[in-house]
Length: 341
Image (cartoon, rainbow, N blue to C red; front, side):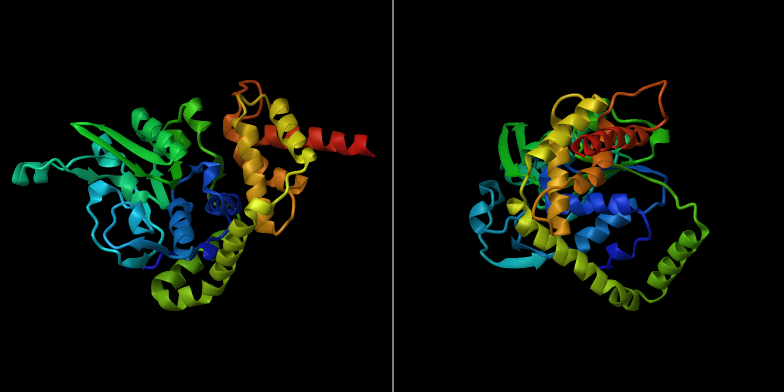
């Protein structure tokens, strides 16, 4: 199997890479939406991150990648207790995928040849404990996106049709990417993604040259290139694993809660999902930084990807929402700092 391009070797795109890392630390953040130009490393980052994470342990033949025999669903009819290791799954969901292919359906071949009613698992089963990647998510049919977001939120896929009543775990990090020029997601769907990042082709000549050099080195001698970047990938992996262990111990000061609530109020974000996701992302970043408690620095760094896609569009304001988030943080935090003095 071809080794993906190393995560640490991706040039630039720091916000996108940080968002991917945070969801690896805490999948409960709710997935990542990446909008930007083609060829900016969106799918490369997903596969690179999954490859640097530790292999998962799963029961051989289990269609939902269960780690223990007791967790394998009854309908899978798994007799083996053998546990094998495999890379974290990264499953692509194509635009033309039907609901049956996504959720699973009646196994027609088995029904016709054996006269048995059996379940044929779909893409959600294969993505369990891994990543589900959707390129051009803004072109995906709305009812499929609704289904995916509901399953990603609940962590369980439920199929009730064709005489079947099936449930199985479906815990994955949902990553969607797309080009905003080809269509936009509905606001209520945007809000369900935990983080949203914008990526663009680099405008610095030196940076573009470095991209070309690294890609050329990867294509010419893949093994040597992977060895060169293995240490940097290992450092990121170790920090992610340490952050997972430390996440539950990260303290949340009252001031951090106030900062999250006041920032969301200042921006006029709907509902409370913004505050909850902002705090969750800030806690994951604090754990990644090795900090004992959430600070204003972590909140500042994750505010834009957490909130920019939750804001009501202002036709008289800036073209993008990132400047609104930056201005609100400056006004609010600078004012609080002055008041404290």
